[in-house]
Length: 152
Image (cartoon, rainbow, N blue to C red; front, side, top):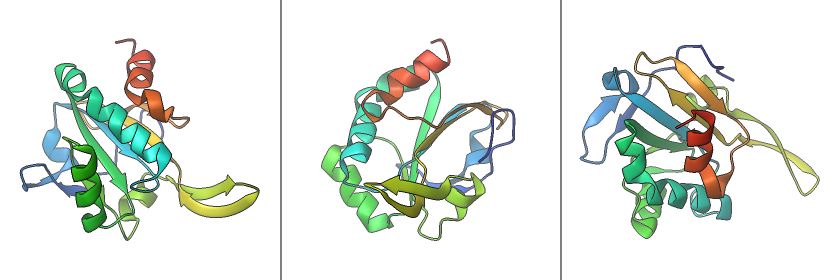
């Protein structure tokens, strides 16, 4: 997993206006890149809605927010519309970004082990360096957790 102090891997995505961007295009701006397992699941819904409900405050603090999961673009479109999410979601169906950040790994659920996305949030500074990594995400309090970690 990419650690604090390391350069964040660059990737391409489509912003909310349909424009193709790279993470590096946001140089000078703080970014929050959060990885989540699956659209329309209880924890992922709670996390996305917490970000949605606090989006104006995140923007006020200077953050650009991006969510990433291995779901398809069509799944993301429905998810975004259902919950009125005002930030881009990246479909990483090939898990290239997920693996470049090191957030694909062994998980346990109800005694069974399987591979999947390790829910994680990366706060990236204006120079593209990971300022803070949150690997034990509190889905219902994601924004509050970020602000607490950064003393905002």
